[in-house]
Image (cartoon, rainbow, N blue to C red; front, side, top):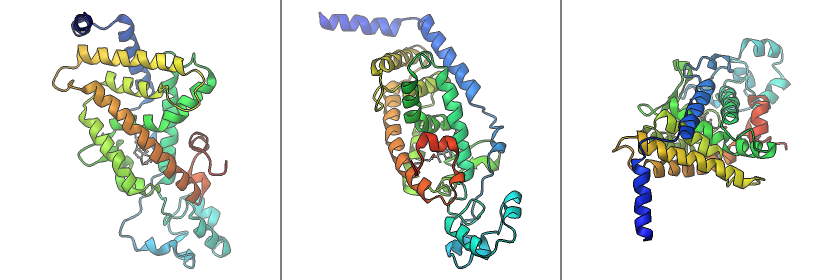
Length: 312
Ligand code: YSL
């Protein structure tokens, strides 16, 4: 009897000719929100502090020695910085070198200012996306903040898949200048070994060949994770996530043809699990980088607020 009911249910599921009006509307809303917050032309990237790529075979690598400050501290900095520094070749210079300031080409974190600006910009876009997910604004403010703070790095990793190229394992955002390889990210202080899971994640996600509807639903489902610590109204978050997951399952059944639809939903759920461990790893690395970065202004106030300040 139970068996029979189950079969009837699953048949009803599979044979439902269309998704509900409400589900169609939800997807349309999410896609529109994503288009408004993800600029595929990457035309804003020129406003970030410029990327500084250290030549891997550059002998000026040795400049981490504080006794040779004049050789490298002022080698090549932005115009504003060099004029500000001119004349200070003595004590200040060696202090600056100790601190590995952003003006110093030999800083091990030469990509940090640019990538901080990219992440900071992305955080603002993710906030815009979250705010337009039906139900988000109706949550209490505390829970909105908890959901955003805990998921934002995961959403950035998810959305970045749109620029990720499996051909050369890099994120391609228009010009060569805004093409980010693994080595670029290590030049923001991130450890190569720990970046590998991020790249593996990108490759695996790319392979799923998600439809845009699936991509935006996955991001929305990730934001509405009811198990984030210290949520006040967990059940409300869970109810919204449930509605999103239901919509995703219905979308796959109705619109995603086999064979790529095979086990697609569980594979997407697995991606959410992968993101948790990437998030955890990121927290650890961020803490180290924010402590070791010589110049706190390499980061941005928003970054400090969202990921935490080493001083707080
Ligand atoms: O503080 C953020 C640190 C992460 C790296 C964490 C690695 C920890 C190991 C698990 C940053 C540096 C990563 C980014 C920003 C490096 C450059 C490429 C990329 C990475 C995601 C996290 C994202 C690319 C884009 C470009 C474009 O697709 C966008 C508009 C996206 O928002 C971000």
